[in-house]
Image (cartoon, rainbow, N blue to C red; front, side, top):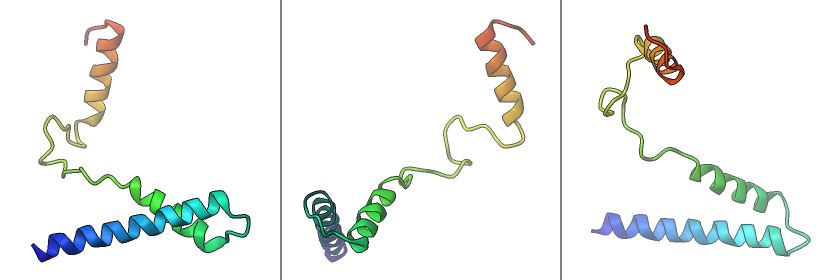
Length: 83
């Protein structure tokens, strides 16, 4: 329970810090590199794929040894050709 509260508190503080830096960049003329770095870093973190699973556990994943065959088969199917 304490871990969950700490995580939510950290997320709230970091989110507020990010929003402050973004608003300062947008509204204040003397915003500097620090605000830009915080804003870019927070935006970059939002691009992390947090819902990924290993390929071995992914449903319908094609192994790296079969990737080319799978791609070629999908290409032929889209063109109406048969192997």
